Every structure is written in C-alpha cells, then in structure tokens.
Image 1 (cartoon, rainbow, N blue to C red):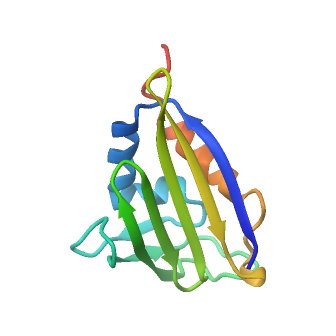
Image 2: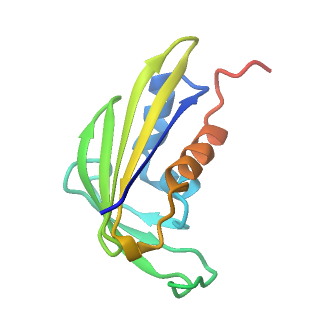
Length: 140
C-alpha cells in the first residue's frame, strides 16, 4: 500500500496541541473529508470506535454524507496517535514532539490502498489545516 508523509511545525506548545487532538470533535476541523464525528463513550482511547461523517457534497467515489468508522489503534499522550478509517482502509499515525519557542513538531504518516483516492499531498493538507487552527504561540 502507498505511504505518504508530511512534517510541520505548529505554532503552539505541545500541551495545547494534545488538548486539541484529544477532543474527538476537532477531527472534522483538520482531517480532510470528514465533516462530523460521533465518538463512543471512551473518547480518545485504544479500541474506541467513532462514527465519522463525510462531506455533504458528492465526489467521484463518494455519495454525499457517507458515514464510516474510525478505530483508534494507539494513543501515547503528548507523543503519538494512530487510527484507522475502516471503510477506506486508511491508517494514520500522528507523532508529536516539543520544539523551540513553544512550538510543536508534528509528523503525519498515512497509508491507504491504491484505489482509495488518497493523494500524495493529503498529509500535508491535513497538517496545514491543523497548523492554521493552532497558532497560540504566534506573535500578535
């Protein structure tokens, strides 16, 4: 399966980034192709299953408002989060580490089948959206 990766520096300290990522409802804000999340009672925990909703508009391979499931595979607080979008067989691993000046280095590795429609730039797009949401250490 193809693997795509991207790295970025977020302009927010690691605790702020983790707090944002640990809230399941925020996934729809930064993960392309997801418009809503209904987490199970476990929230962000290994084995948790979240219902995810697709966008309201149809695309070449998708009907509007398709739903699927996200399975949380691994969680290491403040370091790593991995999950699988089961319908598309997409696996993602997000790793975090503190950087200078209250910033956070983040890497996203995404693996998906050839016919999933996932493009090489997908991880960079996801991180760009995350970066635009987390700018707490940016000077005003």
